[in-house]
Image (cartoon, rainbow, N blue to C red; front, side, top):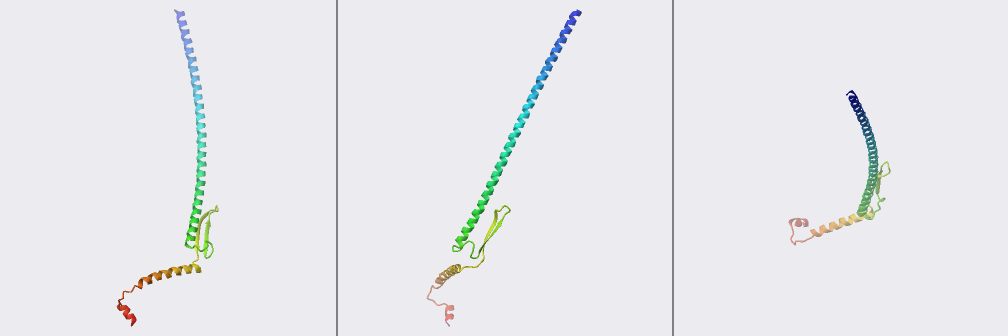
Length: 165
């Protein structure tokens, strides 16, 4: 009976040690898997960071290109505005040169050399050609008004009668 109990105790000890070894192996496997998962996680995070940085750089480049395009558009708009001003001036004064004959141009440049504002002014002096054009328009207007007044009703008013005396 004692021998039987001793054998049973040895078997229990052996099984306990087997269970202990199995647990240790399981623990090592779990630890190894955790380390692999942690390593994968670090790789994924590093890859995501690289992708995020690449995306950010692309956004910055796109923004810089858009800024450059906007500046070009603004310069073109300014050029167009100036051309329209010149065209308008030439339509108003077809016989005059843009610069000269009393016309002056003031240009304000920015620190980078771009035109910030431009103003075309007239000295107020009219050329003989302009004086003649204005006089013709004035005379034509007077003739129209006097033609309207010369309608005769064949009846003399008291005012007209007094003018004769």
